[in-house]
Structure formats: C-alpha cells, structure tokens
Length: 172
Image (tube, rainbow, N blue to C red; front, side):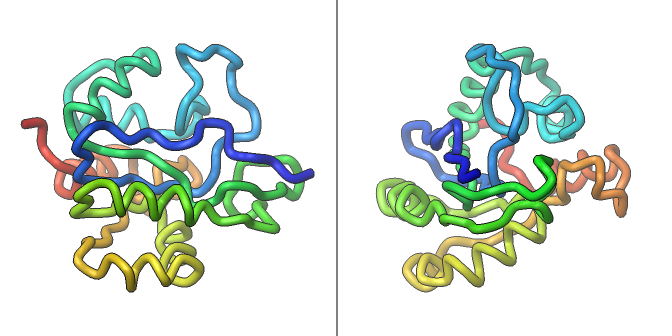
C-alpha cells in the first residue's frame, strides 16, 4: 500500500541548514503534540539532539522552537513509498516517489548552506536520485550524520552525540 509522508516539511524563517531523513515512521502516537519526525521510541535522534544542545524536548513545539533558533529545516527524501514487512527500516521501503519538489523549494527559498543526511542511505539516494538538486545547488555542503537508528551499531550513542556536536550548528 502506497503511503504518503505524514509530516510534510518544517522550514523556519531564514533557514540555513536542512536535515534530510528517509521517510516517516509507519506508526506514531496520534498525539499532535508528540508526532513529528523521528518520533519512535527506539530512534535515537531526539535523545542525541537533547544531549548535543543540553535541552529537554518533550513535545513537538519544543523541538520546533529549538530548530527555529538553530535555523534548521527538516524534510525527508521520500514523499511516498510502500513498505515490505510493514516495518520502518529503510531497507524495507520500496517504490519511492521522491520529495524533490519540496526539497527544491526549501533550497530555492532559503539560503541553505549545509544539508545533513541522517544516514549513508539517505546520502546515497539524494546524490543518485536527486542528482539534479546537487547540480542545481552546487555550493550547498553535503554532510552525513551517523544514523540515529539503534540498528546502526558501528557507533555507540555517546559517539553519535560527539559526532553530531562536531557537525551540527551551534546555538547563536
């Protein structure tokens, strides 16, 4: 069954950075105060971000407020897809419709300096399938964060926190 991305995009005023993930989770809480990107309890993204910026992010608004202050936009590279086995794993996502129009709009309407990919999978898909955006916006620096998935075991969570601190922008 073809699924459409549930969260759209988040773009604060004067965005300078863009974090790109793959696709939204299949199941989320149904609570609009909690549901947003990387909402599953096993995904380490928000716990990593809390450590990097020494903040608590209990709800969607606090996350939006932090990313507004940091001038970080959020989107995923996939707009629609199907899932094998009904799981959230990137390896089980198939039949992609890429989110090229929304990403192009973010890049065109903002002075994006850096795109941060949430995994090597996302980086590979972006460079291969959204190659026209790489060519259209050649000055945008492309950086890959360690995957926040607990399945990415090449790094412990503390090591991921350190890498995110080194790569992501500081609070101004």
